[in-house]
Length: 255
Image (tube, rainbow, N blue to C red; front, side, top):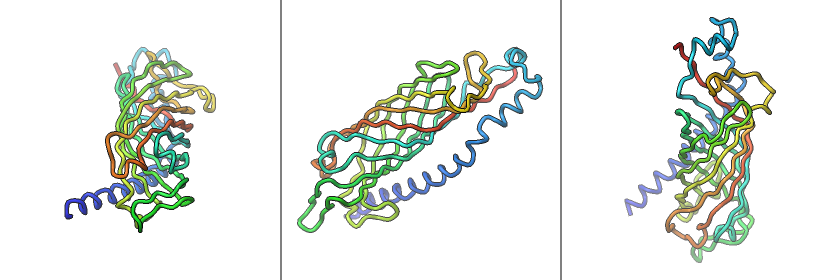
């Protein structure tokens, strides 16, 4: 049917664009990470002779900030999907947009796994045991900064997203009609360990960091939403944990 062909075309486009976005953004972040916060620190403190007291008197933090996280992780599958797929390993990134205490987070990551038991779709189409399985995942989350001091930041969050399963990493699968887009929800949290990265000195005014680099630990659960095609193979949930390097940068403005 024309309608189904259009849907498959859109899904393939999402898969390919997701890979390109992930690879290009990962490269850009890796090149930019060493400079995070340095330009802001030099420029913002130039006029006030690097004294935090004068800085606090004359400047106030913006209510907006931007951050991110590059991570590695793993997941533990539950439900029918755990019968057919081995627990995956992930590489990915988060983009964090902060507004006051709220955090708007974008997920983008790739998972690597393999098939445990044959998926028999028809008499002619199978996803056989031992073959690779890849997952391309994206989502939007809303979080809230529950705790924040010079050393730690804790933010619980929840959101919605999708997972595209495929037997191919960089090409369209020959069985793409049987590899679904799974809608899912996510509930989790992250902790930024600010003081463990290079023991750097940071400017912190009115309980707000100008910038920081951090070690980030994240964890939570994802669960598929609603019925999907071949749900007997793909339905279930996953507990995940990730560890990565991240940070935050915020502008200060004159009062």
